[in-house]
Image (tube, rainbow, N blue to C red; front, side):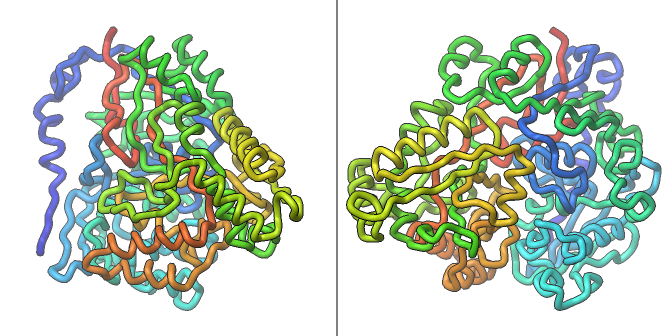
Length: 540
């Protein structure tokens, strides 16, 4: 089986239409372009890092897709398309990928080479880097990744080899038809070794950072804004329309909406509960589309976690007593899906298992929750149960947490103290195990169920609750070589329902406001991979 994908097909329309662009018209659609091509949007929290191998948050990934370019991009519909690689082939057995890199340059003029990818991938897997996404190399199945991450083999044994400057060979441990789609993830983006070694930890600062993406980082004020501007060295700069992209950190979603109404931002999230009214008022600016993210409350099952949560009956009681319909229908009101499992239901190749409590009425769930809590020795006639729930700053997170604590109090007599932290502090507490329960959300890194299910394997870098089940780990391993991995995924979801290391709350929709003059936003992409270079502003 040989598969070759050529970037020439993707770019031909732009190539023949460039005179229209020069005349102030979109090269494909013919729309008149606005003179001001600055895109400004609201960002909830500060960025963790501009280092592709260090960043872990979704908002940071949006910025990294502007500053860097991986081997593969996704189009506005979520399909895999050429990026830094103009083509690729896969061997008959599905175990060897050969990527042909296009002629491209770093923003300092250096050529982008296959060696830049090898360096970045080895750096990701190297324990010395301490990347929380080191496990992504294992998910991809890159040869020797597991042993390298464990410190049992040297990084230079990773199955990624620069055959020459323009040819990258990657060996994986089992066929993965979705492998190219995994390469849109920011952790796989290249970095310029010379620049990193010259500046050390300061290499990601404006003026120092060198990328191969469509934009360069020109300004960063921590907790305030991130500005990037067009990179004239980018291989397709002639067809990039937006000149400047600005992310403003605005923690309060209602303030963000006010600034949207004032024309200060072009895109923002809809505050919880306001979607129906805004959709009626501004139907052409208000959107709700499926988005591959799941919202949960994670239990700390590690050594620092509350003793009560070591009892699965307590965990199930907490999950059963939560009324998801109230959260989705009365608080959020944006088309979100009440959730009784982990994997987002719209994920390609996912088949929902028959989880019993999902079919019960809420009264039945509460009755069972009371029964389980009593069996565990808590509740009426038993020991009082007091827990703490951490959540990061957001009006929506606050409203959901208050509602959840009231449900647990009214239904079970459980006292839950709410603890709010800024995003970076919240992350630090998750990583260090300094929590009892914590608000958590996971957005898929690629459109296949393992992007969710693998997170709860024992060795996952994001399994902050320290859930472990050997059977779960076995299923995750078996899914990698299974002819029908949907069966393993269903069994893994059933184990999560049986062991209840989390409280599933809801599955996301992308509920946003977008100004009508901004075009090219990827509404149809379940993964919400945003590339500023595909967007543009039209004249009003």
